[in-house]
Length: 329
Image (tube, rainbow, N blue to C red):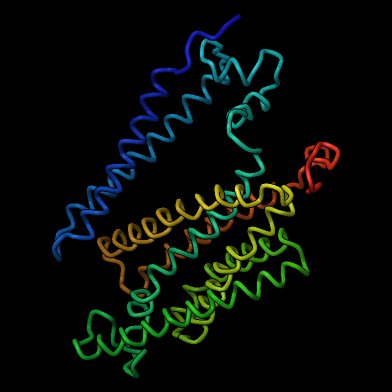
């Protein structure tokens, strides 16, 4: 029996559509950066293109899953990576069989992407978030909302918010030293468990801290969150070395950094879209970020599940010295 085609037309169309909409999204965001003040047409175009891009990727994945589950051996990928004797769950797992690297790499990719998506979303919204939530209370005028501030008060509030952003940057730097050092003691996987569990608690608790008017506690929550954002980057190379050995950890880490690129799109787009939707719905400025923070907590919950599924690679797959390699791991 031989396969008849390298490609399946509906899936190929979906992939090419995804590429087209990805390029359209990048073009739209590039135009948005140079657009005149108040002109949101390019930004709207970019966001719609990104939505079509996501739908195209989902459609391509659904087509491949359907071909695998129906065992359509006319398509090369199905012919190469599945069979009539495979149980259903292995048939589903064949979705990843043709990918370069093990499924474990993609789990770690998800761990990093979801951790970074939440953290980078906070970086993008830190200044406006502090200003809109606490408003006049930042300058000794409690009860005065952000929209009620005059120009002079807004400048003072913006200066405080800029200081808040700078403080977060310091914790981002410090977290790289602290969490990476701690991971040497408790292990990389346990460190990422700490990121996700503590992060979920902090994101879910941040709206409570905001509505209670406790600025110091709110700031402390996000300082810890940003320390874990930096710690995630500092810890991931050692995590990869523990899992896959040191021989090709540089190349693996390079590929894994695509998770950072992806998160750089997901986090800010998600946060900004929800914020604008909440404002358009008439939600008060001090409550605009509540739903966003709960969504970010949900992203960390997904990251926790990815980390839970990570397992050590069996010793049989590591290169041996007698194979002509200089190191075992």
